[in-house]
Image (cartoon, rainbow over all chains, first blue to last red; front, side, top):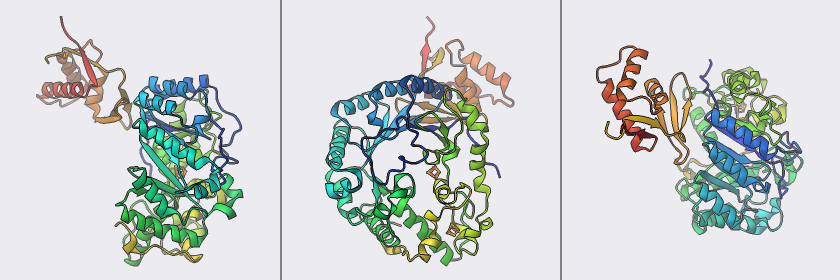
Length: 372
Length: 94
Ligand code: SF4
Ligand code: SF4
């Protein structure tokens, strides 16, 4: 079964720098394959933006490391604007000044800046991100809001903030009046691998976070979102559990390795200019920008084709999944996390595995606590 | 076609050809995107300030099969809708 592939990606994630002013203990970038110890010059990025224009890319996401570490960030953004694209930025928020926020707003092309906020008070936020970072991130948000920029906060849930979620939701949604925020959790990538005992949620904490987030999302009418982490898992797993209990027909696209849609519409570029299918799959070298043609890589690179075709692989073919009650309702989850554990992307990831979660003592949220 | 004798596609607007001959027009200033069918794509590529409505319809008839009689209206509406959205400008006949 082959899915049609668009001629070029719609959006590209750009790790424009390898540097960061913080060293969060669960950072997925540092020590991972994307931590390449160097970054491209302004000239090289600007040249690449012209290619993105020729290939009609609509949007880029600037990330790193910390994008605001680059002194020439304004020049890069001007290059993005000149080349007919919009952009958003993923940031820790601590380096955003009033002047920078004003500049971003003046481009009229900024779709939003995502700031990481992990706690309602410094003690929880700074526990993994370093002293002083809470107040600086809040100042950054304040600057962005002053100029009417869209701020989307991302909360990474870990051992030190799992009991602070209610206060955090109140801070973000009531006090600073964000239109919503998203969540994920510290996962087995980058620095988190070596600090797992101190930061990663235990099964019990994961169950607690799931329950708390479902209740909060009910209270706040669905203003909390997630594509990974306890909120997303709680929702997906409850649906899987219900489908299994009711003996439902297999869900569409499930029962196969269909957990990743990234390579159907987007591409990533590491700080050293190597193209990758996703920044979380930074070990997969697809070629180098300004040397290899982006359109050709997108359409013909065998690794990318293999990744797109993984959705035809049945979960029944894995010993790992055999006998599982949820097989007809499962996607096999993120390939990047599968790679971290099994060394192969074409495998289900244990991180998002409902069977394993329940076998190790995990509890699903109550249906009555959900927003459904 | 009042103001739009020889329409010109706004050069800031991005034509993204995605699947087969279908495409998306993307206005980076607003973030709006509009789907185009293959005839829309064909017409869009001829909005260069050198073709008027008659030329455009003639080209469409030559290029596609079974073009309906009301094609001229369709092309005109398409251009006017695009103009209202700021995606098309004009070079008026003096
Ligand atoms: S590899 Fe994982 S993080 Fe990347 S796009 Fe796929 S599912 Fe998302
Ligand atoms: S074993 Fe886990 S990954 Fe495999 S089908 Fe069951 S729930 Fe999904």
